[in-house]
Each structure stands twice: as structure tokens, then as C-alpha cells.
Image 1 (cartoon, one colour):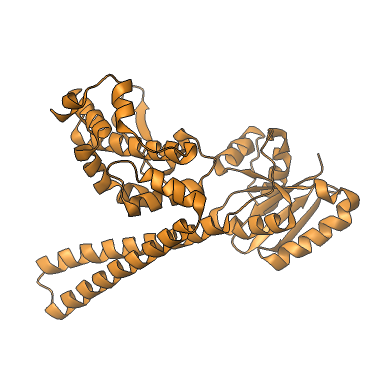
Image 2 (cartoon, one colour):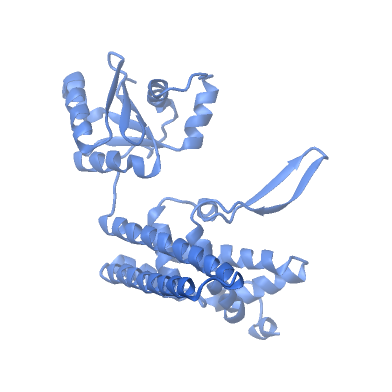
Length: 337
């Protein structure tokens, strides 16, 4: 099929393969570069221009300009994951690794297209604004953590009081800015009826507060089509095992891949839920009774909280801990023991 345009995305350029007449083109990764590409495609495809499909590998921020352009121009796209493209490359025994080869390979991936895979990208501007704010919030959290670690070491090293006071002031300012950013996020959420409903539903879970609910909502908005399994993996709570014959057998642990902010901001809410949420308390106690270390039981509760919040986000329902206890045929008194 010669209407699938392969595009290899890099930071500054787009390497494009146009299957009709087998043309290789390189343009800038910018709105201007994409306009030039579209004009060239119009000359090639003429009346069939509406049938073209851009095939590209998602590369985070580098593919944002491309997706925004396709949304504005209503160009259909087939977005593939890095693992999917890597596996396909190995399947067709593609031994060369160049931008031109990758663009041609992406074009040939049309054979993998299933119903619903090809669509015009859509970006919710409000969701994007929340994403931008949360990304900045994450950078503030990282900087504050770095300074706190530095301060702890500096105190033990008996550093000069002037230095210690400067670091303490920076930490205070960062905390203030964190709160300002999160207040802005909540303000955006409250201005959107759908966001507000989901946000309030998530907060009905005992233990989940305002900040945690805002971060979880951002997380779900960022990955709207993610399954439960994907949600767990995207926040790094998926278990990984290392086994090879009889020589290598290690205990399973979480991957810690994906968005660390979700795990970080849910640490204290998880502990709170174990103390105050009947369902989470029962899950924790049951796992510990089975011999699981308390740290692993806490991770299991955190995973459950995220999946529960995702379920409420999808269904538009509020949380009811008694529903779980009734389903499991557990009395409230048994949990409190």
C-alpha cells in the first residue's frame, strides 16, 4: 500500500519515505518543515491526498510537533511503539540501522495495522496544560530531594552555617513553588466538569488527598487508552523476574520504570490507606499473614490504589469500601482486629 508514509523522527529532522515513486525526503522537525512535506505529498498523491497515513514511532517530546500538525491538518496516523518497531525490524531481518532504512521500515509496517489503529491524533489542550505543569512540578520535587540529601550530608560534615541557611531557604522556596504549581493544576481541573468529576471520584478513596488525586488524574489523562496492565507498568509497579536455568534465580521485584512521581506521591497515602481504609487494611494484613514482607505488602496496596483510582476514572463512579468487604464476605470488625 503506497499511501503509508514512513517517518523517522529525531530531535531536529524528520526522515521521510514516500512509497509512491519511492522517494526519500528529509525535512526539519518543525511546522515549517511539515508544511513543505505536505505540499510535496499533495503533488505526489493529488486527489488521493486524503488517504495518506503517517507511520511513525512515538519518541516522546520529539514527536509532539508532528502530532500537533496532524491534528490541525486532520492527517491520519499510525503510531507504533519502540518495542513493536524493533521486533518488526528483527522479523524482516533488517540488519542496517540508518534513518532512511528506518523510515522505509516504518512505511512497510502497514501490514500490522488493525481496526482502530489509524486515526487523526487528538490532544486535549487542557490535559496538555496539566501535563506541562506536572512535568515542571516533577522537576521541582527532584531538585528539592537533591537539596535535602545535600543538606543532610552537609549537616554531618559540619559545613558553614551560611551554606546551610542558603540551602534551607532554597528548599523552602521550592516547596512554596510546588504548592503554587499544584494549586494551578487543581484550578484547571475545577474549571473542567469532566476532570472535576473524575478528580472528586478519585478522592473518595480513603487515603487519597488533593495532590495525589491531581497526579493520578494527570497520569490517566496522559495515557487514556492504557489497560490495567499498562497502567501498572507505566508507573513502574510491574514485577520482573530474573531466572536462567539453575544458576540464576533472584527474587521478583518491581521494575521502577515509567513515571516515578506516581510512586513517590503515593507513598504516604498508601501508609494512610493501610491505617484508615478497610479494604486496603484487609489486603495488607492478608499479605503479611501469608508471609509477605511489609514492604512488598505496601507495594501491593499502592498498586491496588492506582488500579482502583483508574477504575473510578473510567467508570465515573465513587468509591465504596463496604462493597469490597461485602463481596469478600468480610465483616468490618474482622478488619479492625
